[in-house]
Image (cartoon, rainbow over all chains, first blue to last red; front, side, top):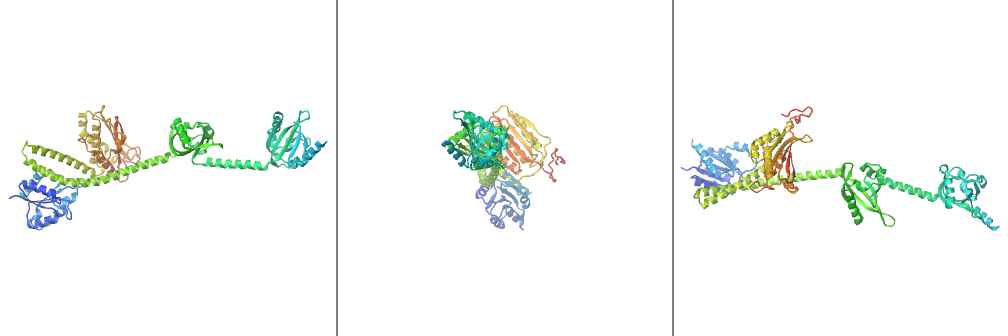
Length: 126
Length: 506
């Protein structure tokens, strides 16, 4: 069965591109453009991996990540990759405390991203 | 005889005019009523006594004034004197006297006729004139501004105290000197000022340099022509103010202001660039992703594949620019520690030395081993040095010889460690120097740089509260001077070895 991935980014260009990239690699992809929307999807569906943008209106990627970890269902341990376009100083504390598996900065080479996603999902399988 | 009667009557009636007849030796022969009134002696008391003993002041006797009068009378036939005369009671009074030669019936000189009148008004006027002249002189002398007058040819005719102090000479040493002696521009400057004066009649707030001893001082002057009663130009008057200190201060202020403007500009740009870089990263990410998909779908060796690869190159270029922009806008990622400037130079050299040698550049290091530590972020300072070295390398591409020299040392005030990076490259014009720290300003081809290196360096140095300056001569070379604040330990000590009580840093 194909891994399911949820991509959350407020930039529609990014979510559409990632959706195509990951779909072409055989993943089943769902997208959301707001943190709240993502939480609602998680109530109904199950995923092997979340890819979260950091800077989003209302709920940031860090907030969303922490919300996910607080859940009392199996989704609380889902693999999470943070993907940010942030150019300011990195907020290392938030990166560590939010509980994500990987923290990446845009733009990232798509081939490299696919590789990292594959590795992260394989860790899960072990 | 009628005539002597009339004459006697005239003599006696002239009660306010002294009429005295005397021999050439001064013995009094005739002393009229007027003379008696004026001097206090009766005719009898005066007769056969010497005029100068009776009526001259002591001072005048000493000057042999009477002999002088006799000489004039014998020679020119008359003499006019304004003298202080002595009354019988000893009091002095001013008088005007005319001495003429008394002729006998055959025209021979027989003696002297004196006609004297008291002149209180004339003397008072003279006194007033003197005191008002003194008053005016006082004003000129007391003026804080230096005042000088010259004749029409430029020779100094008067210099007040301030001017004498300014030039450092006594009055008599200045009078008669040509004004151009003190102009840095010499005679040409003097002519220029005179030409302006003749054209406009006056000059206001004209600035020029004066040469006094070995020193050059800046003067602001206002000058006018001087005229005589007939409207003829007789000279010039200049009022000089020494504005050397003021000018230096305002130049310093101007420089500080320029630095401030530059700093504010850089900060605003930093904010803008952060926003722009962030905005570009998302579409760039999307575009890269589509390119990746296209690339994997295109057949090898197809035209599509070639074009996709070219697009990827473009994308990489954009990424590089954004990365530079991010570096430029990075503000808070500094880790300040006590660091050794020499070590920074050496570790940068370890990276670049071979590369520099490969392109024929000779490297000279003059590192002062005694420099104290500076407060800085080693990585960032190394980045600045790398940037300066890479600029130096590019500047020397076509030069000969190619020498890169890096020097460290304390600045004069012992508050900064200076790193000097000099090259023997193409140098820059003053216009280029002015813009050199501006983002996106570059003198290089577009494949070598996008004009952010030095503005990033500027920001880094600024964050260190340091200074970065540049000196350059076209076709000779460029020197960048990097000043970093000396590290102070917890007790405010610098670790400068020369400093009494200082330690060797940490």
